[in-house]
Length: 618
Image (cartoon, rainbow, N blue to C red; front, side):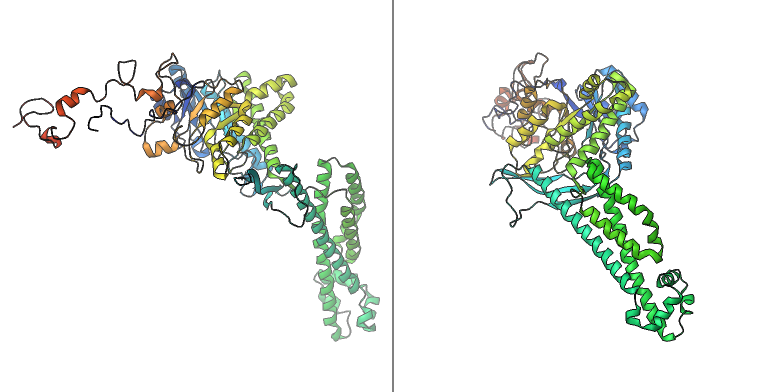
């Protein structure tokens, strides 16, 4: 440092980089930022008070953890409203991490979706207490635990996006399956005009057909095998001789089989005069049982496929197939009791074989699998629309705003095109159901756009870099979602992991994001930008507010002109120009530029003076 009159500002200042905080055109005032509270504590009243003391004018209350959220008293929320009015801060709320589709583990059930809807509604309902006369923004993740519908990567060599695998759901069972999407060298090449989604749909259609016809083949095998065994067994006299024929003259074999399977073997044996034929009879009964089981298995599988075919025909409004299935059902119903009557099991086998032929004759295989993307959007949109409708019904013009957030890349509904579709579908469902709360179609459309929007998390979308995407792809993502953005979450990272650093400390292209959102007529300074910097708090134990202001080049004073926060630490001069004189000349005139003239207690050789009082030293 010898001869240098300015100290190094330290790792927390980036003003020496001319591009840092260069937000000309989209500089954000400090009032545009909000800080999130610690989601691990139920004492959100204390957490908000601490954030206000750092100088912020907006705070986002974190209810991320459902169990902790349930521990926050209503009195705290009401007291937070009083604190809001007293201090003039704005309050928003981050709802609990709930899977809105109702998917849990590897399965789905409608009751689980309804439970998720009730949990989300609870958060929205309680959010109104923060500002009963306003419209509190409530952020809810688009998914939590749902896998990414398609594993998509960007091939940096071919410069094309590729799908490696995708998830499908069997809606009847709620079970999920991951299917690979690989090239078939024997099959026809993929058309250049075929989109990635079309490729997936074609793969699912092919998979549905393969599974359908394989299932029919399996039923046909069981039914024919069972029928063949029973037919051969019911005419044993050709092989067993006249002794057996005498037994059947006394009583038909079907009746003997009925007694046999009912546990009346002893009565059957009494019909046999020759003890040597008992083993032959046991063997015959075993064969009939074998054929019987084959037919029962075939019927169980047939019943499941019939239901799938009927459901598919109803969904697709395929009236030709519905008529065909109805006709067979009317014909089969009178024969259903035959499966319980061992004497008529051979007749029932013929009915099953006929039913297989009916299913084979349908116009197209029923859609067993649906793309998870399509399924998730349908179920999640119902949850969000119902919640928004309930909020409007209860609070009318003061209903909280539901802002759906993109989760980290790798989760379901994490990309802009998916989030956009979810917002649009949620609004559409809202409009369809709005008559129930007294809204006309035109009024419902306005309310849907006002009450349902998107929270854009720039840190979450930055994780696309992990899959080979670059800045241009990130810009396209923001361009896609920009018209729907109501709220922004700020966290920086390097695109590999879900770290939460203050902006400017990773490689999130935040300036480009802001410019694109502003380009859609959005007043970005009025959209609350919530600083989510959990990793910064954890490792550095300081508020990220100043670092964020520097990263955005925010003006220090209300005039919205220089100096800016990215310049402040490097300025010197009067009150209005920075921190004041740093390392003044008098320092060197007294102590020089080396260490030898420092006082002895600091390791120097300058004796005779005490560095605190100036009195002679003993």
